[in-house]
Structures are given as structure tokens and as C-alpha cells.
View 1 (spheres, rainbow, N blue to C red):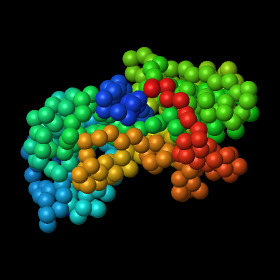
View 2: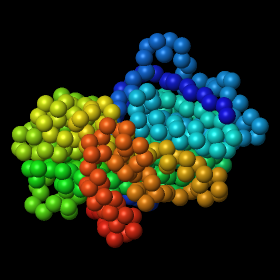
View 3: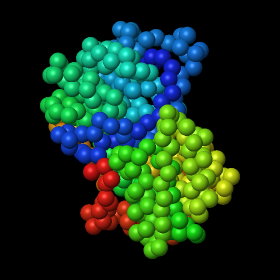
View 4: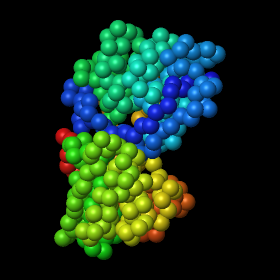
Length: 375
């Protein structure tokens, strides 16, 4: 399997959540929970000194060695420590390995490099071009019309119009957030929970309203409050997020959902200082804030990429697939293998996990419906 990664410029990236509807006829181009992929990505100057422009012609990567399939992933920002995008890379690598083929990763840094990278990907004519994020929705629509034989997989967003050569993968974040809220309700001593959310929009409320609903479901009399980061840098304002979390703690909240993107570090700092417990998103944030984080809402980009590629190769592309608890696209760290080494506080609460697993099973079976704030 040939592996090629091309970098294009430095940038700091924090992410928003996926569209409200799984239907390509009514997508949401608004900022999604990509979820709230919560790690900032920075490509260092030393790397730039030796790297090449992602939009430049690829050299030295024979994508179809031995007749294998070729896949090209284009990211909206540098991968670096962005856990959401790292999972996307893992997904395209897994797809290439399964097919005995090759994969390339084009990392973008701004609007211009995204456009150049998409064009470069299309020009190389791989079996599937994979793109992650709402930033690519319009670009994919243009390229799909211009190149009807090229297959595209758009993750965490969808085009406004349906195309036979565009397959979309979106997420139902609210289902897993509800389960995290249930954990909070069962663990809260004050019967007060809260959330620090990036922006007051329906898409981002997927990370706060279901959290409150889950807590109230398992604990009568629980109250909930949400504060928003807002401002000029809502996705990367740790200081503001810390202040908002401290305000929630002052009001009695002892369980707080950290949905502040890059500002989550501020929420965790406040948790340590004020003595409350927090919940992370996207990846296992217990490792970066041990003793503070109870659990994490996991958004599995790798699953969406690998399954989406397989769907296209099986001749079943051109549709939208929504990933939630049932499909394995959303989960909690507490419900995954390896919990013992996760450093998550939920590992010490087997009784709570047993209750949460029951709720998960009810959601998967359709017995319990979680309201979607972005519906």
C-alpha cells in the first residue's frame, strides 16, 4: 500500500457540528459538530520548509500499483493533533489496505488551498475522492457536475442537490450526548448540570440540550443551564470557556459538558480549580485532563470514511447515510473497549454504565427517541 501525505500551509483549526438532516435534499451547510473536533492543528515552520504545496502536481505516488484502488482524502485544515481529522486519515488508510491499494492525504489550510487540493485530487482521478467538512459542499457540487464519472465521499456535510456520484455521511451527535447527560444526572450530587457551548445555534445545541435531557431522564428534579462562548473566536477561546464554566460551577453545577471546541482546555482548567467534573468530545480527552473528565462523546470519522468508501465500491453510492449509535458512528469512551486504560472517571462507576448501556440499547432499538435540536 502506497501512502502519501501532502501539506499545505499552517493554520489553527477547530471544528463545528454536522448537518441536522441526513437527507441530501435538506442539508445544513452551517458549522457542524465535526463536531466539535476539539483539537487545534498547527503545522510548524520547519515542516513547511521541507513540505510541498498540496495543490502542486503529485510526484512519486503510483496510486494503482498492482491494480489496487486509489483513494484521496482532502482535509479542510492541517491534521496535526486534530483528533477528528486523524480519524478520517485512519479511515482512508483502512480502506486502502482492505483494497490492496493506495491513499493520499491533502491537508488544506484556507479557502484557496482547499480549492487547489480538491482540483488536484480530481485531476489525479482516484477511485474515490474523500472530503471532510461543510467547507467542501459547494466545491463537491461543482466538481460532481463537471466530472460525473468521478466518485466523491463527503463526510460531515452534504450537497444541496443530489448527485449520483456524491455519497454523504452525516452524524447524529445528539444520541451520544444524551447518554453523557444520563451519566451526569446519575453522578451529580447537586442535581445541577451545565454545558459550555461554542455558539447559540441549533446545530451546536446538539451538544447541550440532549445533555440536559439525558440528565433529567434519569434524575427527577435535575436542572440544567447552558452558557455560550461566542465572541470573535468561539472555537478557540479557552479563557472565555473557562470563565463560562466557572460561572456554571458558581451556580451549583457539578457536571459540565465541554462543547467549546479548542476552548475545552479552559473548561477542564476550571473543573480542576472549582472541583466539578467535565465531559469531552470527539476523542478521549480524559488522557489530557486526568481526574477531571468523566467520559467523552466520540464521533467516529474513521467508521464513516471506511464504510462510505466500501458503499461506493459496491455500486451503492449517491445516497446519504446517517451515523448514530446504531451504526457505530457515535459512542462514549465508557462504552468502548479499553475503558480500563482510558483514565476516564466513568471507569469507576459500573452501576452508572449499566444504566447507560440500557438507554443506548433502547435508542438503538427505537424504543427511546432523543430529540434533535437541529431537526
